[in-house]
Image (tube, rainbow, N blue to C red; front, top):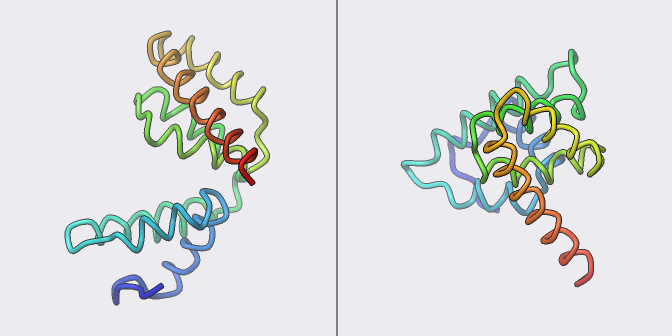
Length: 136
């Protein structure tokens, strides 16, 4: 993978490693490789600060961070990110049953419509994951 010049440095590499572990290498590499002059600054920011700084902090483990992300993304009604973070949560050891509990908890505090949208995305993501597993 030929990487853009601005995608270098210790913090970027640290974040890239964590991001790959949580979200999967194929997804992350596709995002980074597809960066343009317009999108590269945000890719750099997200990789260095979100993943390299925040996700690497010792105060919370990755499972807990995944629980929080799913709840916050439900509150924000961000289906694309929910789909991505459902996969990440599973990679971090969160079970499907626990994800269901997060959605129920969010339904009370964020609203039923947000939880219904999230549950729709979760169900679609599970179906994609199961189909991918069967095709291997």
